Image 1: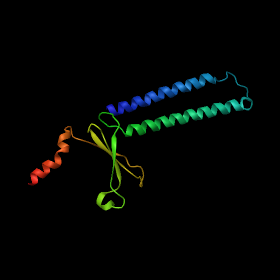
Image 2 (image 1 turned 45 degrees about the horizontal axis):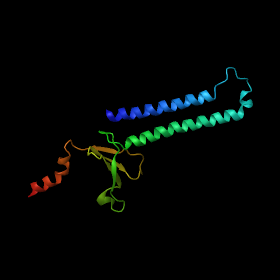
Image 3 (image 1 turned 30 degrees about the horizontal axis):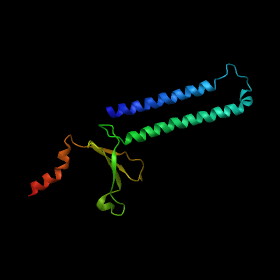
Image 4 (image 1 turned 180 degrees about the vertical axis):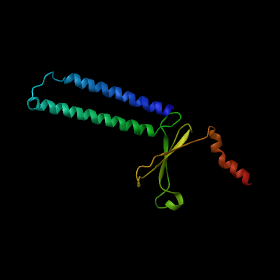
Length: 151
């Protein structure tokens, strides 16, 4: 729940900032009360500047949403810290043995792993979040416990 709450808070913060910028733009270029019919011809350069500024504002809005979504995908689902230590696994040359190339990111506090495809061939594939168990030492010592059982 914290993960989606943080995402919503980032979107709300960006929306408030960009809306404030829109109000600033509207205060600089106020609309006329009763514009004449030939107003677009008379005020062409001014309207061009206003339209370019509004296009820039729109691109800033789109860019902010893209950056927020990109940042959110690389965060831990538990503690909201950025995922670290990208590890490349798999190989195109040894795909049958090692699997397709992937990039794995881990939480610095051991909450989980995010696995995403290195190359998107067949459309956009969603990254897979794999949470670790609550006891990190169980995961780390699992291989030694299996070797003890075999002997």
